[in-house]
Image 1 (cartoon, one colour):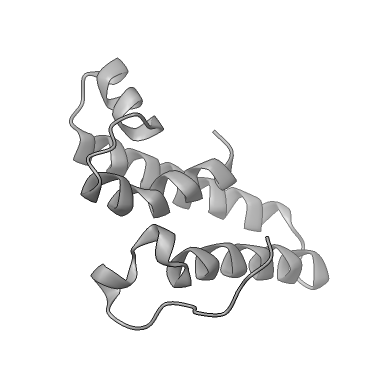
Image 2: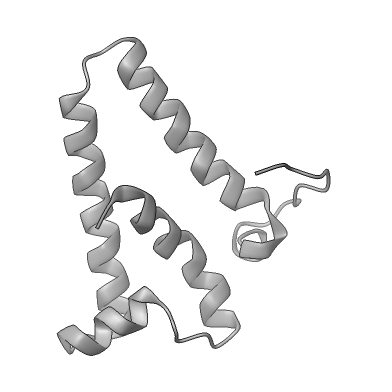
Length: 102
């Protein structure tokens, strides 16, 4: 699994759970592995942290690592502020209300 997919699985989980959407990677993987959904999500989160550490270890300090860190922060931040992901219901706060081109 690439880190981008793990980000999406993790950041979409709350929305999908609230909408009772079980047609997703977390539920499919839980079924295949015989684990519960919470344990499966925890595994995906742990794998994401491990992948993140490997990526950062491979990138030299300076512009390459800064570029990765900026991409990662932007990717997560975008999910946090878009109403589609419903994360402000958990975190509290405001959603982004200006149009964003993706």
